[in-house]
Image 1: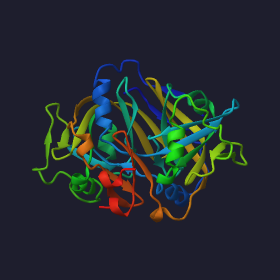
Image 2 (image 1 turned 60 degrees about the horizontal axis):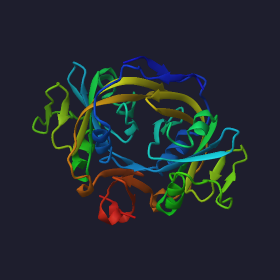
Image 3 (image 1 turned 90 degrees about the vertical axis):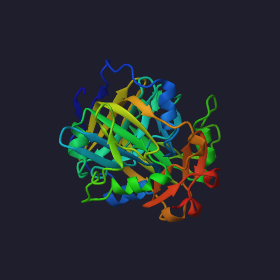
Length: 178
Length: 178
């Protein structure tokens, strides 16, 4: 990792939290679960904030709030696994976004990659990557990840990806096509 | 703006462009159009990479490739407008992602805010903000925007937001709910 980049302290004012949340209730997103183990055991977090930034080099970003129970692990891990979820993976999305539960208690649903990272075996697709940059904003951090390895089924057209919008889960499919 | 943060030059290897694109064909996204004018006339770009990072301060990010015709303007503008699109705004998403067309030729579809930024009047919702940080990765840049002003209809539950997945447009609605 290069260094942590911190936004200037002078950013004050602007939209209230209520106004800002109302704006993003208009903006749907795909859903990922991100896992890592920085030496203190596995951690997982559901994220609606994963996107591809650069194809060469292959780099994606996601954001994480300090409020997340997974933050200490995900912000100190060198490598991470980003799982892309379909509607059949809704249980994983709920598990990794529910407070106060052990997200790895059921040892039948996760394993470790040969490189050591914990991952959920039922997830539709995943990318393993190395953290290469962080940009800190308020109590959140945007993490840039260099994609090293992936497990992607060759059937994107047949899957029903999971989408979150306005506090509701959706799935894409033939009937949602325009 | 604070400064431009550039990823280390040592990021090489990892997934091929084909592998990385295949991974992100599994990951749907909401759609935004981003507009600005840095003094050389209005520019617009369709983005599948907008997410909320922090509520206090209210900050969102998006990413932009140097390949985009709007890049010179969007990367030098101090303020921007991020439009959140519904299925009824599909024409705007296509307009602002089509190469070689004047995205502001039809003067009946856009106007300027009192603060000067160009915006598309038919867009379902928008947020105006100030650029507060940039993180450069390869030929792309992640831009952090402090949200200053918004125009958000009070009907998120009734709208059909636009989603992009696996090179296909979708809309969310009652039939896509899980």
